[in-house]
Length: 256
Image (cartoon, rainbow, N blue to C red; front, side, top):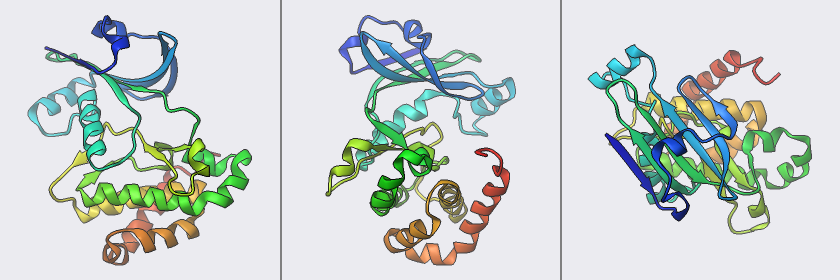
């Protein structure tokens, strides 16, 4: 069964295979997915395409034992969820899902976000050091605002690292609102109740990323002041810190 959706006139004459097999510059690549930057009718887009995982993973997905994160459908649905709660994302323009028994292929296509930088690079690259000192507090407040919108609504991102926050560099001069886009939500989940373990892990993952690239002291102060559930931070501080420390040990040589 084939599901195909587009709200962009440019893609009206394109087939699923045309778009799934488009050539471009690989930005990120995983076991069964990759993100590419490509040009289409002189406009820049990003496609995140998925192919089937392992035979065992497919069986477990079909039986409902594990969540199917090897499919663009979750990312497609996440766009709408995030839009409803006011979290900025790239604009979704196309979604395709070709369902076969053991060989699914799917993708999402979004418009280009112009003049942005990943927060991990913004905080670590030498050319941004002056802006980092000037804007870091406002950036951290915006990040916490995004986290609040997620956690208040029972949403867990599952990969909450600085590299998944894109800073709109043009917005730095806006005194009212710095714009930050959230990306990479194929694992995003919305639940009626999120476990304390899951929230601790998510906050610990972000803290690890801050420790590596940002200003831990400034971030923790802003998190403590602005996070909507201050009691949670106090009661689970050790769990959050332990998760961040564990991740630091795990990835101690990754960015060396």
